[in-house]
Image (cartoon, rainbow, N blue to C red; front, side, top):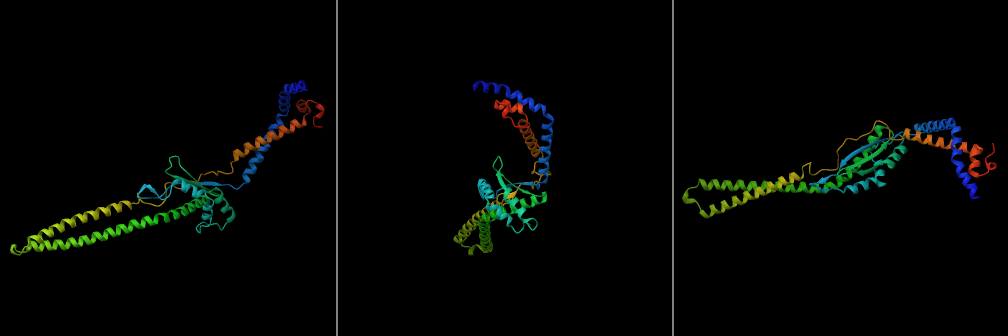
Length: 292
């Protein structure tokens, strides 16, 4: 038994190689047919274009106070509930082929962080370049609306603080005008009518008022700086939406290569099953080969 197995092993590879070599033309034709069929099937599938956008997460005052952590934003977009919210958006026109458009948004909408972690990349497909662009635009609007809700309390607080500071400044400026008017009256009065203690108190009040005015002006400037659009802003796109010229799916080249491989494999199996000699080498008995 061991001798037969050793003999089969020695003759198996050359026999199979010789058999396949004899049917080289059949292999080539089968591979080409498989490649053409696969490419044809790929061409019949609905095309998909990917749209991509890079955006920066909003912040309050500085990058240390982001509206949400980048990883949380990525998880939010990739969570199944978010694509559903996008397709339910009233601004997403889905009157034509609604099921197909809903499905492509639900299946392909995704997000990931860039290598440096400062930006987030959002991607979604469409059956046309314009549809892909609109799908991504609406998805980003949904995210911006959510982040606007997070930004609003901080923005409202800053605006209230600056309004209160301006109010206080206006009152202090009014007080200063009154104090200056008193000063002018005292300076215009005769020396005999002047009261030294009143003069000292008025000078002290003017100095105090000057300090308070400076404090409120600095506070207003600081709040204005915090409200600067470069420091406090909602989540915003940093690139335009990019849609490639050629569809990303189906990949005709990959389909053709797969068809070529399957065609060659099918032809090779057929040749080995058809020829008695390879079967005799494999089984050790030519009588076990398939009948013609």
